[in-house]
Length: 344
Image (cartoon, rainbow, N blue to C red; front, side, top):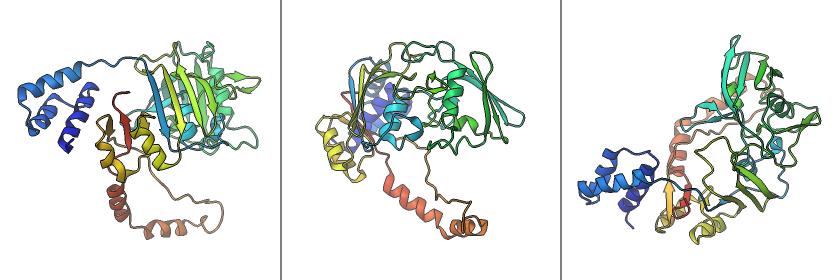
């Protein structure tokens, strides 16, 4: 398969998702020697294709450890972040494809008092996997779970500025912050802060009962997590599969081979030098997407020498950012999201 053929196949997939225009598709197809009439028919066929629910999705994840916990405050990487949050749970907000914080379990959110106060209205009809309605008390308990004494939650620092969180009726949650923070809706989207059922003055994180598109069947840390579709999920445009399996395959070669041989349908953290080889498999589609993640230098600014802002600035100025960006972009493009087309 030529590079151009591969691009056309990807373009047909994107056309079915409404992510490529008819004009762009036809121009690409004509460059491959396809007539304009045939290209127009191909686009129309792809654009009309409706996704169908069903099947089993097997994800080959690069992370996972036998010490992984179902406690969201202790989610370490995507071994738990994908399975127990993205698949199993919801937070108050989520990030859309453009990197904007938008409502998820919340129906809306509004700031006041210079963004020191945030009021979240909960989505009507959202339920936990056990059928219980999601209420403001569940949200309060889920946030306070990360504020208990001696907590080891990764969200502790994120919520350090949260002075209080209170329920105002069944469907309204009010957050008071120590200072104005226009980015609080982004914090609310963090994968360590899913909404869990309130229980006995805390939350029930042990059972895995959440609100997400899939219901937990088995959690075998560092090995496999299996889930089945939630028939009562409040969103109709997700949860296309009957069943999802998240497999921990930390070895890059083994993870790549699993996709290439059909043992999995999705490759997490592809080995970029192998992408050209994967393109030769007609059952594999490689998607290139824009990411919004970033890497930082972590410094404890409460201890010397990093408590000195001059030291922190010296480190910043010592780095050639343009060179790092150039080398990183060259090494990482295209992005490594790969799937087997016959499953998706």
